[in-house]
View 1 (tube, rainbow, N blue to C red):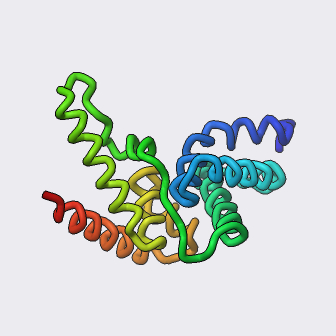
View 2: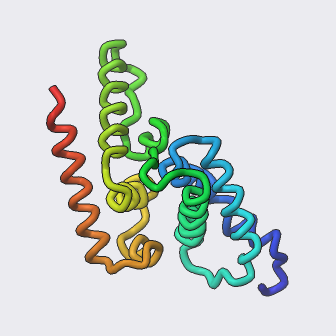
Length: 175
């Protein structure tokens, strides 16, 4: 580690990406309290494995650890068929933040749009939801997602296209 302690390396590699880690964990677990538990577990794993971090995209490395920690947590704490998604705050990354200069009516419509988007994402099958969150919320590239999920890039692209198509169809049904 070239004279850099494990704690220093952890601060450099992991800490800048904690907000993204928490966001992913919230989307996978469905609430902030469970997400905090998952991220804490992931941080312990990342700290224990920091010496094996070989460089590259630190954010993708940490999110992969968070993903594995979340699935472990879900397997221990929830039935397989019940998995919720994160809150509206995570949608800010999608660029659907309200316009503070807008009217109260516009703010109300924006809130309704956010709720519809959240519900549409929640309705996606987990494999599709996961790819949408990793790409559109966390901004990972196809290659990083493929490596993280251990699937071919073509599968990432296919799942993302199908997920986006489902979101468009679902949101298009709204009056």
